[in-house]
Structures are given as structure tokens and as C-alpha cells.
Amino acid sequence: MTRHMDYCDTSPAMHLLKVRSHQREELVEFTDEVQHKLKESGAEEGVVILYVQHTTAGLTVNENADPDVPRDMLHALRTLIPQHGMGFRHGEENSDAHIKASIVGPSITVPFKDGELLLGRWQGIFLCEFDGGRERKVVMMIR
Image (cartoon, rainbow, N blue to C red; front, side):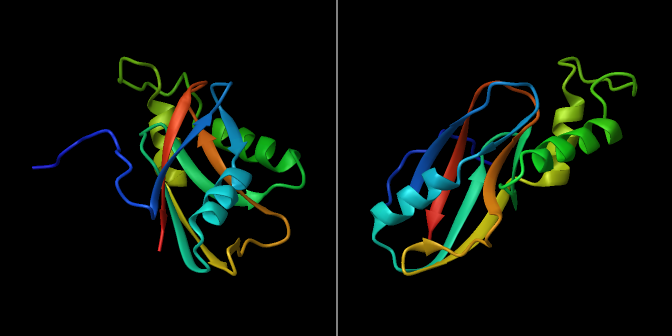
């Protein structure tokens, strides 16, 4: 039997981040929040694992220097999987969001050294919102 519960922060190596979206579909960068929590932890080397606790949102690492990249990603996903016109049966009219979230995936892993995320020069950590705007919960584990 699967147990569903709201996350409770019981470990110093586990944190709950709250990420706010403002549009139905949006990529929200939260790299700075992850780096801040990592610095607070005092951990020097390992991996950060991030997991979004929702079925209509995902996580990705992608370019954060050019705002056209997130816009292009959302445009491509909207073109491939539009909200309406595909005969979806789910009554909440957000089947497209569930499909997009499954394609993107709910988790990412980022290595760190000397307390710094080892992201590439143009990389950032993004919440991929497909049914917003709302506040999303992201579990952060430091190992």
C-alpha cells in the first residue's frame, strides 16, 4: 500500500522549497534558492536531489541566460500537446498538464563541490509549471 502524506522536514539533509508560479504554463527558475539552502547546510561535496510533489509540474535543468529558451520550450510542448482539441476525457481539462509533466519528469540531480552547485555556465534549475499559477512543493535532499 502506498502512503501519501504531506512532507515534514525531519532531517537536516532534507528541505522543503516552495516555488510560486503565476501563469498556467511557465518555467520558474529557482537556482538561487537551491544554492542558498545548500550553503546553509554546510555540506561540501555530494549531490542535491530535487523532487516536485505534483502531477502537473516537473523539474528541469536548462539555459537560464536567454529568456527565449524557456518560452521556446513551452511553445514546443503546447504545440505537441495542446490543452484542448485532442479529445481528452479527464474532467478537470488539464490532461495536457499531466502528460507534459510526465514527459519532463518530477526530479533532477545536481552534483556540488565546495558547497557550490556544479551547474554549467548557462544552466539553471527550473520548475516546469503546466497547470498554474500556484505554489508548488519541491523536496530537496542533500547527500
